[in-house]
Length: 308
View (cartoon, rainbow, N blue to C red):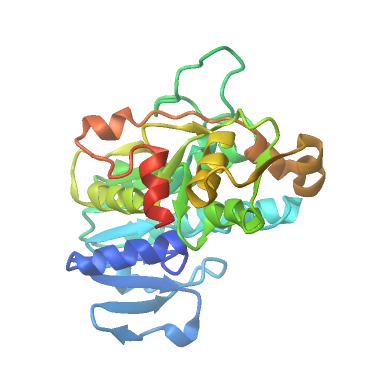
């Protein structure tokens, strides 16, 4: 089976590509680097595409059995200027449209497309005591990320209307060794400082990268995965619990917990601070009902593996 992966050189993409190769797939990474076009390394090959100019290897798309669509500019990498917000949206939406238009331009043999999405779809938890976790039937939240996620998912929705199975993994905070959110939390821990954003009570819906990759494979291969599915562990934790659990695992009680004032985060991060200071509690029930079993369902098991 041939599986195309967009965004295959990012943190999640590399893990997905590795698992696909282990599972016996022929993997094609779509890359913006022209010098990699046509390179073959065993069952892995590269094809050039350029979303801005609409260039794509049409034959590769039409002969693929599966597509995992991960391409998109980093949300927290740069300040949210009007220009960069457009980059965030366009990198997701225009790439989805390019894939969809190419697939619909000729006879294809695609069995399924699985696209990344994000729990930014839901926005912050309601300000009521013990709000129910967000389920996939909730409408997109107003605001930048909610609108971005809605457009992101809509960019490939035309495939569903043409009989191609499409699934969207609304992904929480991904915990992975050597990158992403975990590396940012661990940075001050070098000095035995557990830096807790704001009051620390904000809820983090997280997922271990091993479970996220397993979810991508399940969504790729199992017919029951259609539409939106939350990709987050069944036991969300507060930000303070996450940070302090990492500190305790590494240093026992020999660390200092320091709150980072919300005002300082807003000054440094600007509009992005809302993503650090806000709670988003999502439900994992839909994928669990489908039979998915999380290898790391709680933060303790995840941390033990990540920091072993």
